[in-house]
Length: 170
Image (cartoon, rainbow, N blue to C red; front, side, top):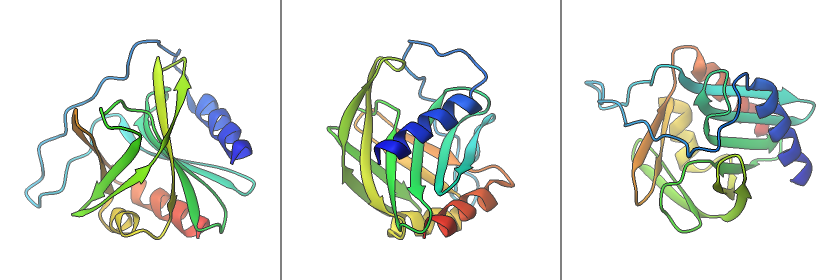
């Protein structure tokens, strides 16, 4: 996974057009839910897909920047992925995700990021976990922590990228 981590860093760097900041990432408030109860997309933030050889990356963040909230990486057909949470949500070494009522907390290790001025939480997860199956259907996921709950909703067109990631990962 070390090579995959380097690939993710390269993909994020290639996608970033803005300069890095040492200030903490801002937590955007969760948008008001739609009448259906689903969160609404946040302007500029969306799910982006990167592919290189057998490695894939799906991340949620601000377009054309290094402002990434959550990244998922996998090797094609592996059925497993690495989760990287870039937000400080106040939880102790877990990545806690939810989609449409499905929840899970994955044990994580912290890896210091000088750019973020804190730890990135890194966890391993199966691609067929119920949280991700629901995410594929609904197009949104939330990161839960002691400090906040942040939703990450797809804009029109993004569900195809999400499905492409999970189909390729296996």
